[in-house]
Length: 100
Image 1 (cartoon, rainbow, N blue to C red):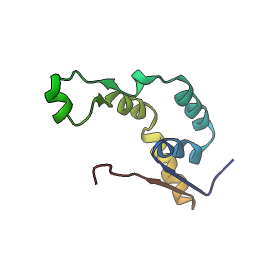
Image 2: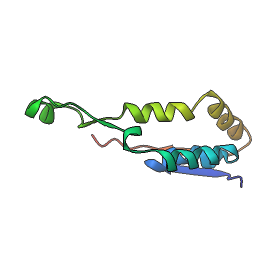
Image 3: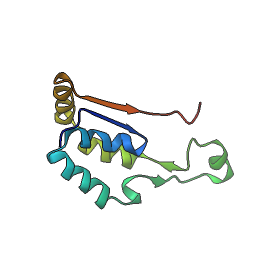
Image 4: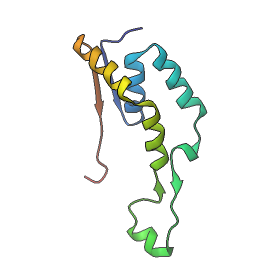
């Protein structure tokens, strides 16, 4: 199935590129969402007592999520999205800042 427009917000923004491109990307999406565990998304930070709880930016480190995304969102995927855009298709992803 080929979509003319795909949108995504939050976890949907991670699903959207795969759904937008379809084909072999659907199998990658299935693998990502059925084989990951908490350790693939975040690790708990070693908090330095109360100081860490009060002043740290988060209780978890999301570096594992960054690494997971980086394994799948590569130059080829971006080139495929660009080619689809040139063909008149749109991928629209939104984000929100919880700090504002």
